[in-house]
View (cartoon, rainbow, N blue to C red):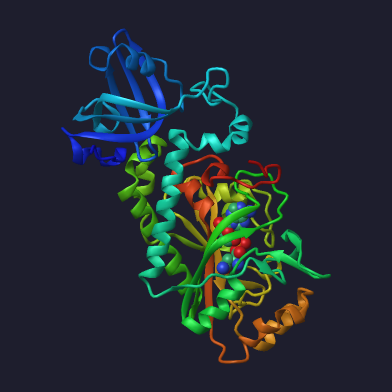
Length: 435
Ligand code: 4AD
Ligand code: MG
């Protein structure tokens, strides 16, 4: 029996006959020889089909294969410096599972398609080399995030997706019917629940889909995105910043180590990633306003950063920038006020360099019962909905904090992409719910 291998395992089979199952990625022909390139999800394999070896009929079959036809190819693996991946396969046998019809050919061809066309064909576009590379980097980022928390004493606790109340403000909630006369909202963040689980486990994190009904059509916004959110009991803003910094250094290091090929395919300048080392610069919001005004931004003290401001703050930096101590006025109700000033809160945003902007938001939470009650009232939030959250301040309250990182924004930065839409297999945006 000929062993079935994946293309990424070819190096261990040089000189052997093996079987590879995949799809036709490309085909070159010249007279009595054809070079079908096979893709199987793990790599590309250039095959060499020779008429004299295969016989007339089989050679004709190979020669007339169409893009994305599904195949099982048997042949001998041979080292070949010039081939993609460093190995070639001398074809001995080909079994065609499905030949894609010329009458209805694979819609994505090497020619330039517009992004709307590609997005409409996202289910097929994922097969392209670039999308393949991005998804592999995304996988590595997620694995690195989990490994970081798992090896630093955090316990993964999944938080609910149906929630009865807002975490990040009511304007961006997706509402759903929840049985008789009752409404639920799709979660914007697992944070409030993380605060409960952190009091049970000390250090926790959740990682799951989150939803924002934001009508922003920008290169940074999705309506459904994946967020990793750590939360720590007995922690201050300083601890939150330290963990965010360590986690990012560790993620970038892992991608550089394990996804070199993919970064190359994406033409990512890896020297930019190699520069991601601690310590990251830290500035207060006050200082950021000064920098922005000096660069010509119209922003005034008290205003939230717009996308352009984030770009201005980060475009000529080589490391992520941490901005903390934001005006209380535009931050969520749960932020702990600074000890020396009550107009600013202990929140921090981490802005990725090269103009990418915010990838992490977090901070220290209010732990004092009376202060929390006052804030809930000031923000006109329904106190009943927060009863359980208030309980956490009654039974052994402690300073605590954490953050949330949007996986897609992190991947867009690491891959050097212009738009967030390519970082998730099936993006959900203001005008995109399909496929
Ligand atoms: O700054 P945000 O809104 O913070 C929170 O939700 C906190 N409750 C997190 C916490 O402290 N546990 O969102 C956190 C991150 C942002 O920095 C960004 O990376 C990502 O989530 N994010 C989005 N990503 C894609 N599309 C959107 N519409 C996003 N909104 C936020
Ligand atoms: Mg934020």
